[in-house]
Amino acid sequence: MPPLVDPVPGGRPGDLARAHALAHELSAQGVRAIVLAYVDTAGICRVKTVPWQRLQQAVAWGVGMSPVFDTFLANDAIVRTDVLGSPDGDLRLYPDLDRLVVLAGQPGWAWAPVDRITQEGDLHPGCSRTFLRRTVADAEARHGLTFKAGVEIEWTLGRAAAPADEFAPATQGPAYGATRQIELSDYAADLLAALDAQEVPVAQFHPEYAPGQFELSTGALDPVAAADQSVLVRQTIRAISQKHGLRASFSPAVTERGVGNGGHLHLSVWRHGVSLHAGGSGRYGMTREAESFVAGLLAHLPGLTAVIAPSPASYLRLKPSQWAGVFTAWGRETRETGVRVITGTAGHQSQDANLEIKPADLAANPYLALGCAIVAGLDGITSGTALPEEVVDDPARLIPDEAVARGVRRLPTSLAQAVDAFREDEVVCTALGPVLADAVVAVREGETAAVAGLDEAGVAAAYRWKY
Ligand code: GLU
Ligand code: MG
Image (cartoon, rainbow, N blue to C red):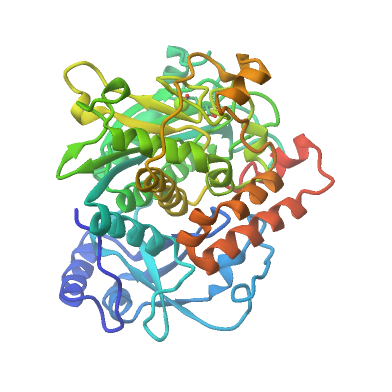
């Protein structure tokens, strides 16, 4: 699907007639209102809703919402930058009709992601969806490159009846165990049916490692659609979980110990419909450009961590030997390196080969995360960065001198460290622009201050049900 054009006051060409027809179709299907969704800098999905009769108006003139939400923290406290966080002003939310779906898990509701523009009709420099759309469009215009992306969803299910400050895992069975699939058989079938009705192409669903943990992955899409889809899938998981007396947490660390919830980013780079990750003369069939793309990701990974792992709870998850990929290293199918190179199976590499960015979690705003990852990889291509040697097995096993010699660095171990690395990353900050870059710094510093004095259990509890 070609990237959507920017919204304009009065409506994008053709959108008004389309919205008129669509609104009546929605009403005939029992839809009362449409959820207009966007993700803030802290990674929280925030919404407004409009009755179906107002869809056309929304498409023409947008729906008002304050820019103050760009500097909300996960606990709803507000921080400021020089341009964001004030109670003044208004933005217009424009639903993307291409991505509008009827919510199968919430009868009476439809859902659409939005782009945000100013009352004057200018692009809002704090709109993360616009940032990703522009980044993708730029890559095509300047380099002739396109992308396929996906966001893996891991979540942990607790019993809704448990006290709010407690986590009671919804399953007892072992990791990846058939027992767990049987324990929540009806729930899982309802979830898959809802996603099917919403035309979300589920690739896989399985019980994961940690108590009560599950994972779902979907097919690769253009990056904006992939980010939208990850938000929609989470909305659906929450709704179906609630119906089954369960509570879903996408927090990176539901408890302070053990394996957390990842939100691994999958990314592949294409030119004229041909993958750069297969059939090339580089390692594992990568083209030289694909190798440089990986090298760019690794070079920027410390600063990127503030974007892809943005919560104090992220650093409870980002520990060695827990499959979260906390080193600036790559390996073929290695789950402990920051970038896992996936070649696909013999005979299908030209379609399946891709990169998995492991440290990313679901506290991340997926638009910012994918956009910044693309910026980092492209910087590797434009600079012709050489890809270091592969790391086989867990990089935690390398002795320190060997790690240094091979350029293998541990990723930041706290949000404060990640923000320091982010600030030093001129390429990523420049691509975001000053408004978004300052928002990232201010919100991360706000989150760090919000948990000052809490121990690890306190941090896990503070964010357990936020994401
Ligand atoms: N749950 C692990 C994480 O925190 C990932 C497990 C896997 O590789 O799927 O990222
Ligand atoms: Mg997993």
